[in-house]
Amino acid sequence: MASVAVIGAGIMGRGIAQVAAFAGFDVAVYDVDRASLTAALAAILRDLERGVERGKVSPQERDAVLARIERVEDLARAVGRAALVIEAVPEDLELKRRLFEQLDRLAPPQALLASNTSSLSVTRLGEVTGRPDKVLGMHFFNPPPRMVLLEIVRGAHTSEVTVAQALDYARRFGKEPIVVRDRPGFATSRLGVLLGLEAMRMLEEGVASAEDIDKAMELGYRHPMGPLRLSDLVGLDVRLAIAEHLWRELGAEAFRPPEILRRLVAEGKLGRKTGQGFYRWPTDDAGS
Image (cartoon, rainbow, N blue to C red):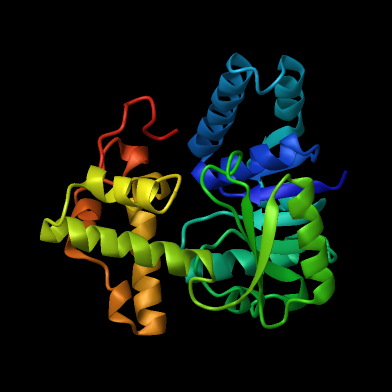
């Protein structure tokens, strides 16, 4: 199979790498931070070990997945033979645009350049490359190995061939894809963030506890997870960045970040990855 390069070894990047390797692809994982690469491989191993313990992953599958993942400390080598490059760096448009300029120079001419962005403009990323027709969004959901949805984002210049190739990758990854146009927040973030922000405002107003607000959506609307717990899982810093972006781009007051969200982020209470957000999380969950 063709190889996949994943740029960024954080929670999403390492999850995407695991998905691609489980699907049979050789995967190169790159990050500017060597410690993040080490932590990513350790986290993938832990997740696979849990799968073995639960009988959902065989020891042979675990070993095969690990053998297909290579940690790479040089960007040019990471993407040099890739057919698909998936960027999973922080939600900062200028950071991503600088990265896409590099990827355009270093990746093979036919390689697809995909962003895991949950809200930023795919078109703006494609503009800095010489291959805007091959640039698209591939928005995975946290945690990537278990979440079935994959949002394919078509930029203004993304070709039909690229969309078709992305859909093929999505299905080979074992995902259920949807295709959306390049609009702020796409389909999923625009709806999900709106619900999450309103739940935060309700908590601020004392309408109900975080647990009961979440239970209302879980039991009353059959959501598998309430909006506040989901915000903790996504990361409150990520939620804040997306909300600010949507507030600027759409000009709708509904996307103005609530004070409680700003306060928690300022205090370093970012949700599951730090052990505390709207909920307290077990210490073995933090950073995993």
